[in-house]
Image (cartoon, rainbow, N blue to C red; front, side, top):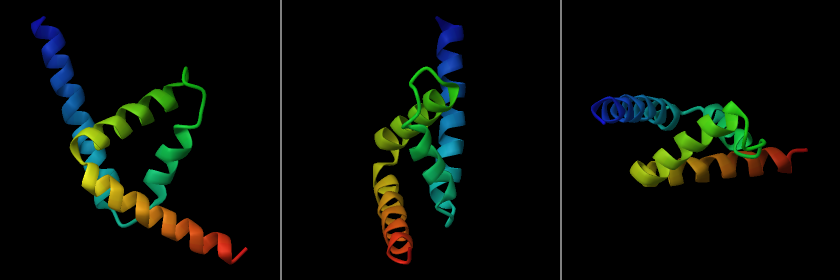
Length: 83
């Protein structure tokens, strides 16, 4: 039980680090990659990693995630208009 708890803490700490890196950067590239990976087959490591990070952001950093998603949406919308 203690080992499982420590493993979860380490995983949570790793997710927090990744989430901050993803949401604090002005670049949209990282979040676009995570979104793309959420549309992969659920058995893939990429999907499972992206899903864990996305779920962590929803649960703990929902305001930051929402703002970042809106920025990605606006950026992509402008990109599509120029095509």
